[in-house]
Length: 137
Image (cartoon, rainbow, N blue to C red; front, side):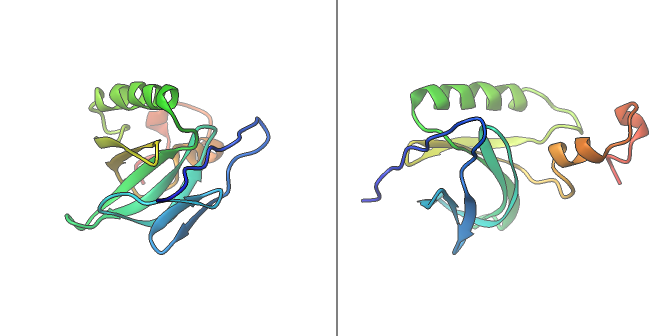
């Protein structure tokens, strides 16, 4: 049995994120996901990290967000976030395939879109309207 590690978070510290043998590792804790092989870390934020991954049965590239913290409160917040995203159908939003839990940590499997993360794009985007940008280049 794998021991579940509770991550200690503070404003100035985010967990260390890595991939080992196709499995996401957060602060040394491997988080195996059923039928998902992690390929690379895309970006990390205050609440979690997003990875490019492959759904092994469908051989489909997907994006996977894993929340750092664990427990029912975090899962409830993740469900709220993912439900809002799943309710939107728009070219600027990814499709959500499912929300699961591994070792008490929630994760969402979503459509993968190549290119920079939204955070990276916002840092480099010229000021102005989204329609004036190179978002779809």
